[in-house]
Image 1 (tube, rainbow, N blue to C red):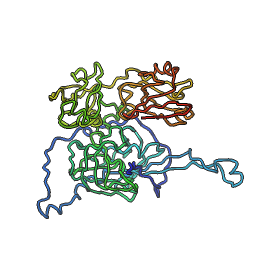
Image 2: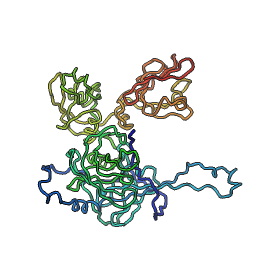
Image 3: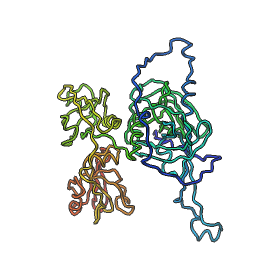
Image 4: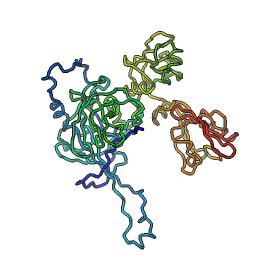
Length: 489
């Protein structure tokens, strides 16, 4: 079985003495409009090499221009939770030694300078939980870095270094939606800590989903060699513009096997735009849907599967105001194909609140186009977080009401209504027997449908003891049968 290896860039960092104590400046990372502006549309003529002279052309000018703007990111954190035999005073009295010392864990990744005054983008998993972050430039200058903004759902983090007024080289953000399968790309980073390395390959896919690294589930796949330590580094087109942030690989060994994934530059642009507010909020249309299957394609009069079949429309939402109805198939946004709900979320996520979208629909076998304006997702109903008491299958489980805003905050493609599990007490039955996990949607308890948190106490008093959950679209039901817990899908 193939496995997804998140590039944590693990390993000791020799020669670095990191004084622990990170500074956090969330909400104070102004990103200039020049950085966020999309590049102008430029027609690209793609052609295979026509002669030997073209085959011998070099990528050196692109690498030389971009490499100084790719940095090494070293992070360290104190692990105070690791228990050893010497933590016990009974053993220390026989073997000597003072109080156990906290263990310092160090890791290595890469980053990309996006603003000349010292703003650097990297992966969130490279710096998550760090007590100190050190940035090493390509010219060997080193700076302590502040974490100014991070978003776990997109797996991106923004760092700032104080250059004392010195201007740094930058890499411009490209338009990742222009990338096509077969385009040549360069990956720049610091694999295994050996030093800055440039590898090349092609774009293998442009809309890869199901990788499980970020909630937007839309990645550029490349066969350019990416290894531990490359996380947070640059994936470049041949103009030297940033196509994506290298993030993960599929690997049996932990090393490159030619299947790497990068977060698209257009998601990076949205992330940077949100840095000043300290919270990443994307637009909302108020329509939910599912992938069009072969069966639903036939029922909709389509000649092939593709698009998002609308299953719910929130009254008063942008989708409702635009006339979108249950049963419509959303097939495109602003002229770009939408193949599944993950791609629809990506298309919406790359646009800000207030942006007008041109939506292509298939309705009763005909193609229609409607215009809508993205709105800020509302928190209606309020989340009303509460921990279930009593003696039932949800005892010790914290639940909340889903809403468009709360679903977006939690991520992972949750529905916009229902009751969601947010936490489980370690001593709860659900923790001991493992039939629930955070992110599960509770659909029924003891045979009673529950749509809000307020409905749970009454349902908990009913019999028999059972709970029906929805986990990422897969439904299952667990119940007590003859004194034994049993679950079925």
